Length: 399
Image (cartoon, rainbow, N blue to C red; front, side):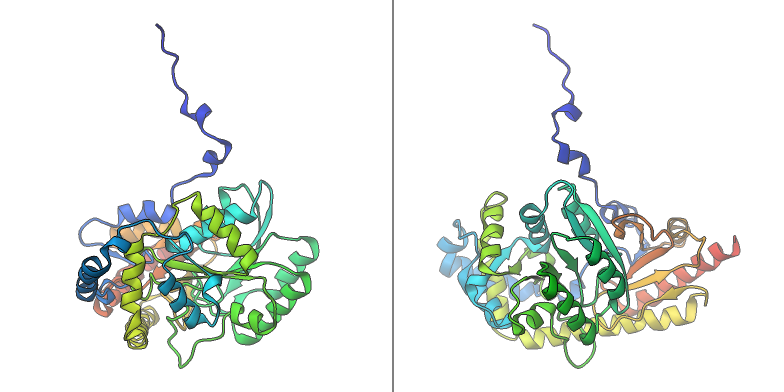
């Protein structure tokens, strides 16, 4: 009996053609060789992981509540953790969905709101993981420029005069990749425009607690709730303050929207692992404020080390942001220079970063790049910047 040759490309669905490897993940493979100082991955500082505490609490959970921790759980999440999140944010537990990382929340938002050709409004640049999650559904990306003080609101207004996006996705606090922080007046102005049009906003606030100043700015979600507007879907995560490996995050939304997100999650994983949720809850129950203070102090010291080194080592023709929180510095090379070209020279110096192009949903940004100061200690940050400075000077010498 003959066997017909199998064509996987014919077997795949239309959406499979939109699935692409993460540029950052692929670049990280190049940076794993010994001696490379990497500013590439947006990885939290490993010295902040509560390893010993997690080991003790995991053992206690399995000993005392193992039949719950190892069993199926509700899709909405472990109720004590939902209640903790609700109290933290000032909402009802019924408005909280626990997700398997913020990336799952982005995927669920795409499934619920996007169809082929649906317009969706993003910053340019924006978080690569969100672009990937939304692109799978074949939307039409609308973009507005963004910088150290958030999106260009005049440009956003012009887009909204012409288009009705399914939602606006943005990161107002310590944006990935720019590190930008949207000021309070701009948040209020944006919210006014949103409320006038009845527009859904997806606010990604993964870096909310990583501020370097005295206080955190109110989120768009908080401002919207104060104004009685239900249209902001709020995404948060414990990856940056506890551990990304536990994959525990959350979405907060109006009950009608949350129900659809829950139903979409049921088709993905039924529920986020119960043991992970219970461990996160135990880690948060005591000393959460002190933990956050330590996290902020560590990242503030690392950011200061990077900025001081950049001020010394980087040619004056190169521009870069001065973040007030978060994990990233965004750099812009003089026109005509390529971040991809700099990447090759940087690898020769055993230092790495992420070129900025992939963060632009509709292309562009070839002369931009992202630096993360989160993983390295201050001494290695300064050495990495010295190496990057040599690579920059070598590239500029060729122009």
